[in-house]
Structure formats: C-alpha cells, structure tokens
Length: 163
Image (tube, rainbow, N blue to C red; front, side):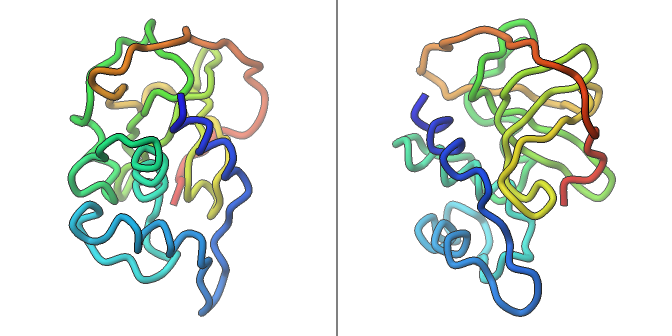
C-alpha cells in the first residue's frame, strides 16, 4: 500500500523542541490546508498524529477523513476491519486520557498493537499500544485489503500517552 510505504519512509521525522518548528511537518499541514485538517496548523506543537495519517493517505491519492487533524475523525473514515482481518497499513484509532491517537498497524503481540504514527514521543516512530485502547480499525473504502495480521515480538515499552 502506497500510504504505508510513504509512512515508513518518514520514520525519524521529529518535532523541533522550542520556538522553532519542523518545516517538513508544517509543509504537510500547508499542503492539506485547514479545509481538510479542520484547523490551521502553524506549529509542530499541535497534536499531529492525524496530520501525519492524512498526509500519507492524501499522498497516496485517497481522500482523508474530514477534520483529519482529530484522531477521532478517523474512527468512522473508510471501511471497518475486524481485528482478525488487520493488515499492515490499516488505520487504528485509540482512546487515551485527554484525547485520542491514530496510527498505522504494523503488527501485534498478544496484548498490544505495534503502530507506525506521528507524534509518538514527538516523532514518526513505531510504538506499542494496548489493544484494549483501540476503538476503531479502518481501511480505505474500495481498496482491497492485502495482507494479514502480523505477529511480532512483544518486548519493549508500552505507550500510555502519545502526545
């Protein structure tokens, strides 16, 4: 899936701490614009997980979720996927204290999803999030699901707050 290849190529993109902002992240926001994002993103301090997913999806030629900057907007976008039909590139939406998070499915272990997302420790990275926090599993409507669930090693830190 083109969107997942794009996402993978961006691993390591990070916020700039302090008054400066990453021009790459700001360029994604400028290209998408406030009509798609729902707000005018002017810095990399804004929660940008939804921006990252929207950028990858749009670059693949697929319309993003309305108000794409909000993680929760992705919970009704596209088509629903059952947990046993997940494939790399599926969009997963999570709840957390103070908001939500959206990222791409990479794989899973018994208790966590391994996801590739933006604004995970202020960077594009792969992290583990508890399956119990997942509120939606989505796939672009009209695009055949290619792949199957991927079981991976379950070692490492489990994210509690992706902001």
